[in-house]
Length: 150
Image 1 (cartoon, rainbow, N blue to C red):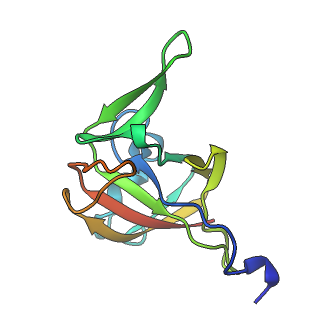
Image 2: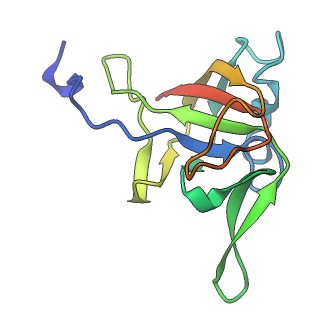
């Protein structure tokens, strides 16, 4: 094993994004709609994103009703718009000889991206009420937990 793939490498905390709605995964990449459909995608539970996937773990991105994406008004002010949607949790892992598995952090450790052509694999589904978002919010939506490889 190469020293570049040290198990002691920094691994970002899980990141989140909404599945459907404005600025969602399915809006940017329709294949996400088939994540749970047997035979819908080339491989059940897998999506290869052709675009950058933006994600966050900011506490203000969560509301009981769902995930709230960042939006900007004409003056450049930030607002958070809540979407009635399943939430996708992307769990980072240490990079290894297969590829990268970690979120690329942006301006803080609470926001990041995954590059185009990242393959996301479904790990588990948590029902509403079975998970708590960052900041302690009990979100009344399902959580689809995926891992990434790029």
